[in-house]
Length: 257
Ligand code: NAD
Image 1 (cartoon, rainbow, N blue to C red):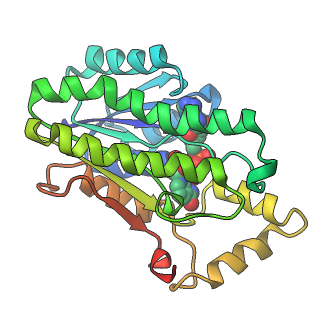
Image 2: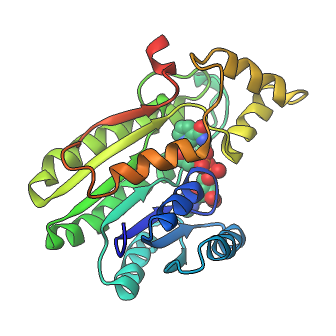
């Protein structure tokens, strides 16, 4: 990955940050994007301590704002001159609630971040990749982009949309050397999933975690590094012919349904 330029959205935490570490270890140049400035600064510091030679740009941006997306793309070009990979990872879970009780404002927010955020990223990065005749895009869907998940209507709707947009990008821009895939993580232990376990069982989130893990074929939750290694492959030149796929990273859980 030496001198390859990769943008990671939602890069201050969880799956985004874990992938930043994996790509830094492979000597990629990285733009880390997040709307949480404090967390982004802390991640920058940690990454530079662990990988002293890393070429790193951080940009504060809310991916649901079209101008701010354009800005992180422009800043990346100003700093690095090209964009080889986009890891379209920023996303939120919304609330846990039955469909008929779901808060419509939360629903709209989930759509704005999880669908439009991913769309804007592709909209501004693809023309640059077309000029280069090369690009790799990895969008973050979820097992909720493959099947239903009780009490998560907005999240499931948004992640199915990510799976759909991934198919379209693959068929529209494969001719330009751009391969686009999605990943569908199962339960990977990140701050987002810890919050979900707290919502499911506020008195004993660890019990919710163990219960969920016990239903996985591997009897375990995934680790952020498990996702990072798969993304590092899909977003690199090593991936020569996989496109338009949504690849589950879930210990086989989605095969139970
Ligand atoms: P996380 O909450 O740990 O990290 C998400 C990061 O995205 C945070 O740093 C947050 O500040 C940032 N972010 C959120 N909204 C943003 C916005 N509008 N603009 C810019 N940055 C924003 O969550 P995570 O578990 O690492 O999740 C990352 C992605 O993976 C999400 O799209 C999520 O839906 C997906 N996912 C996670 C799991 C899992 O088990 N952890 C499973 C399936 C899918």
